Amino acid sequence: MTSYRYVAVAPDGRRIKAGADVASEEVLRTELILRNLEVRKIRRQHKFTEIELAKQRVKPAEVMHFSRQIAAFVRSGIPLADALDVVEENATNKRWRAIVVEMREAIENGVTFSDAVAAHGEVFPPYYLGILRSAEFTGQLDVALEQLAGYMERDLEARQQIKSALTYPTVIGVLSIITVVIMAMYVLPKFAGFFDSLDSTLPLPTRMLLAVADFMKSFWYTLPMGGVLIGVVIFLLRKTEPGRAIRDRLLLKTPLIKEIVLFAVVERFGRIVGAMVRAGVPITDAMGAAVRCVHNKVFEKGLEVAQERMMEGEGISAPLRDLDLFPRAAVQMMRVGEDTGTLDIQLENAAAYYGSELNHKLKRLTSLFEPAVIIFMGLIVGFVAVALVSAMYGVFQGQALGG
Image (cartoon, rainbow, N blue to C red; front, side, top):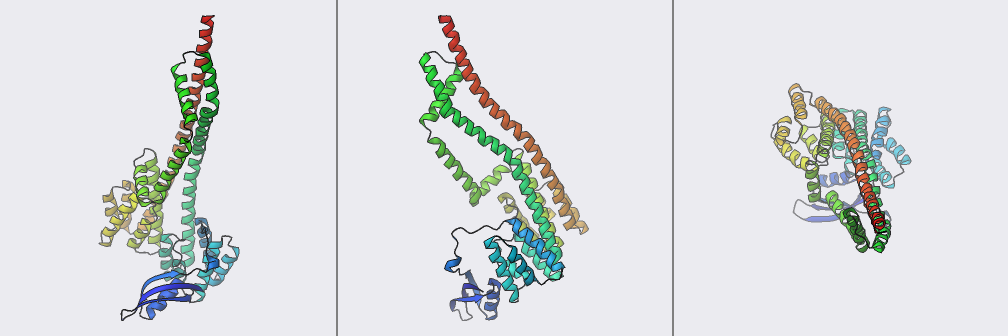
């Protein structure tokens, strides 16, 4: 059982603050409603021994494997409580094990599987619950869970491809910066002392190089300050609402990058909405889940406007066309799906098409970025070499003429 604190309002207007030990938040909410109380707030109470200084993260892969396991158990006729008991025994993530235990206890107390999942919305994606509820009504829980696992697997593969494509250029870029810093702070100052001792006029490239080295040596503290500043900017762009909005607008205007972002959003949108429509979820609810899953503030804002128009009965293709965010081909496929009653199929076709285009764009970006980084590194090393060699040649030539 889990301890909760709640705030409710009685029919006579009295404000009630109390606690209760129940299987889940949904059970408590149901009990309060049956007592004719208006629920205002429910908060879980953690025991002192349960408090974690750093909450362990549940990875999407855990949820994917969970979905596939439960689908197999349900297909075999194993009760959900027993299936969750098996998952609990094999769970290695402490937080995930606790979540599975709470879901099992909730189901043993008569709560539906979808309600048990809904109590942990911070772990399960927004579209997960909608598909699950529809599957429970149609009696196709195993099929829905298998589809959810397949979608999450494709989503993880797409993210991994993006990370893999950026790994090599990132490593090369970091090594280039480290090389330049080492040369500027430790190697070039030795040459500077040598050239000063000769008291000769140095070529412009050499003077530029030595000026950089002198700056790095005198103001070395600007390097960690710059690193901290970059870290703060990255944090603001990733963790704050205004920062994410600025980041997403910039990405959609950056050449080469904008198509990758666009295709990734369209693929994710098609997968989510297509899967939910196929499961029987109302299109407006599917759009609401997509708004929370596209992970792009520009598209989120636009999809919220489209959702409002859809709730007024305008369908899906016309509002998305007017947003001027989605590719015309994707909107056309959705319009055909609406006209022929095959919206789920057309959305999945659009997701498959733009998924393959995303892979192609990633490979192309990698093929362009890798030589660009190598050329940049070569220019830096070449400039250093030319500056040093030209200076030494000028010194020796001057000494020869003087002799």
